[in-house]
Amino acid sequence: MWGAMIFDRDELDIAPGGTPAWLPKTAESIAAVLEHFDTQAVQLKDWLARTDDAAMMHTWTLLKNGAPVLSMPRIAVYRSFVLKHMVHHRGQLSVYLRMLDVPVPSIYGPSGDEGTL
Image 1 (cartoon, one colour):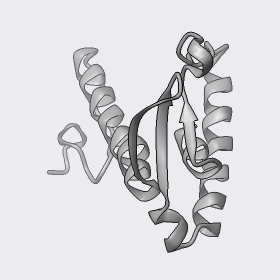
Image 2 (cartoon, helix red, strand yellow):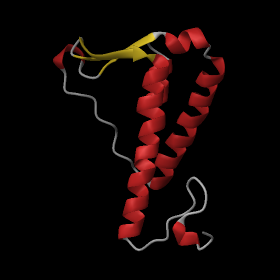
Image 3 (tube, one colour):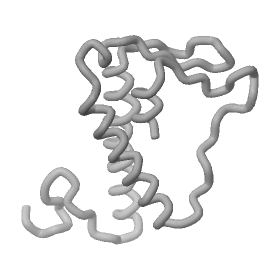
């Protein structure tokens, strides 16, 4: 979702006109979440394929009620809000799996739970 918001506009106001901050929709099912993720992944790959270096260096701004919260090159926003954020959530997932005594699957290569190290 953040990928589309970064590539299809130059700014995003998370509380336009003083409205309450944007909140994501509640997921109806696991299947709906996976379908939404897959759709967003295809859209993001398309944006990345069509975006040149100049567009990646263009300033993107996050606003709240019209006031700038941050302004950075689009590539920096993509790296921070999309790539690093996904890595963060993978880390969270592995912690939750360990807390539930579920073996952690391979994420960036074999995990210690796979017995191949």
